[in-house]
Amino acid sequence: MPSRVLPAAPASTETLQDEELFAVGEHSPWRAALRVLQADRAALGGLILLGLFVAIAIAAPLIAPYDPLAIHLSDKLQGPSARYPLGTDQLGRDLASRLIYGTRSTLGSAIPTTIGLLLIGLAIGTTAGYLGGWVDRVVVGSIDVLLALPRLILSLTLVGFLGPSLQSLLIAIIAVGWADHARIFRAATLAAREWEFVLAARALGASDLRIMARHILPNVIGPIVVLATLDLGHIILMISSLSFLGLGIQPPTPEWGAMLNDARTYLEHAPHLVLLPGLCILLSVLACNLLGDGLRAALDPRSRHR
Amino acid sequence: MTNTDVTEPLLEVRDLVKHFPVRGSRLGRRPAVRAVDGVSFHIRRGETFGLVGESGCGKTTTARVILRLIPATGGHVRFAGQDVFELRGRDLAAWRRQAQTIFQDPYGSLNPRVTVGASIAEGLVVHGLGTRREREAQVHAALTAVGLRPEYARRYPHEFSGGQRQRIGIARALVLQPQLIVCDEPVSALDVSVQAQVLNLLRDLQAAHGLTYLFIAHNLAVVRYIADRIGVMYLGKLVETAPGDELYREPRHPYTQALLSAIPQPRPGQAQERIVLGGDVPSPLNPPSGCPFHPRCAHVLPVCKQVMPPTRELSPGHTVACHLYEDETC
Image 1: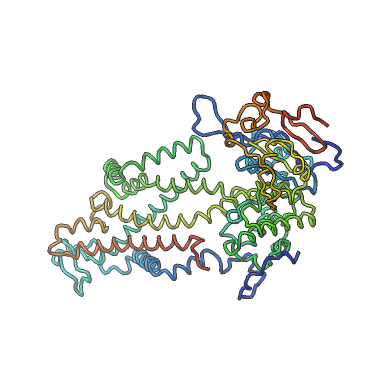
Image 2: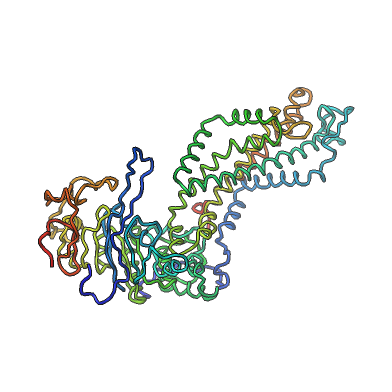
């Protein structure tokens, strides 16, 4: 039927290799996303900054000049010097070392919490969306109730009930935060069930597992990654806020929010004690938000550049 | 419905029912949307059966139930003598290969994250057919058969136009060498010039591969062009079935007559009188008693409000469910 062949598309410039037919080609969404990320300075900045914080957290023992808990009372409240690059706090502990180890405790609790939240949200949300019926109604009801309560107060109450510690902090964050995620994953599952290419795969005879892995997950992974990145920022803020209030990570363990709280009293004499932990919180949350927004744009197939 | 045909039907649908229970029901009685309410028809090998009706009349639901994409509430579907609803495991997989589908929305029916080649090859992979290299060759052949270049296999769906995507969807169905293809409004989303190309392609493929089509549409001109026999659906019921030419020449059911009179005439001078239906399609949640069409019918009889008219064969292959033809049977 050569007469009905559509007008030929512009010939591609690269030569075609049969072996590449099913390989991840240059139009792979991940590569395209990477390319957009390269063009998006803000997102790239966020990625680099976040990478830097992660590297600092991992390498903390190697790069910290002092033990973050070592007290040098004779050197307390000093400004930056050759001996103490960012000065010392009210007990003469090296601020640089405390900030470096603070990165470790903040990210070390925020990242697992984010992953935990995502997994719990994914489990509850997809189950509710897939099963429907009374399970769905119970889940949706709980989500609505939870979202109607003020979060900070709810988590404060929970931490107060469980006793202040890192563990109760994380339990509180997950217990209060899962509803958002469950709602998103439930909606994604409901939408995915109606996608025509999912129906097409079922008509071809593909198994549920194959459909989930090949057709549904790759198409919701973008929103999941975006959600995780933006969430990491919120959770860093939450951990710092609750630690600032004395409900999270306990002194003497270095943590940015707790350090802020310690430094409040010395705001006039040693403002760097407040400014530097605050700056760390600001930068890490900003990095998450910039990266999250950039990824959201990059992973949207419609906005992707060819 | 059987008459003098020698060929046994490839697909036989009998009293198919699909009710969707409505959520949030109270007071014991569970209301249901009667999307498909007792539909029977058959399709012979190599034939195209057109199913027409307005939006929401149950055409798509009928197709999905036949393909076992959603479970039926009642009725039977036989495919080449097999009871489709009884198939399990291996037999079900083998049957899925025989019955393929083409969807309405060329933008929604292809996974945006998978190359076109991989989408087309998916059925082969799922059914474990051929080696990787053989599958590639089959994908290339299928693309060529639908008028696309084999190199397109490694591109992504967003790089194609609606018509090209629909061709890709056809290639995906074709690659498994099915006997039956259910075309669910395959050209409704395309503009008119591209519609004609895709319809011609479907016809050519039917001739080349001996395909049988169940062709669903709301556009009567499209159905007339492609279908050998046509069934008209209204509110979950098949009200009239007839060979294509006969249906257009001699529509019997008042609903079919109204539908046909609504086709725009190419030559204004010849405009025929239009039958304008009053009111809206009743809700399938609470269909009228008796004949579902009686509240809008110009020829309504007292009996229409009480009794659902049985399906009668007025002439060979022409069946109508209407009380007006009580005395006419062939």
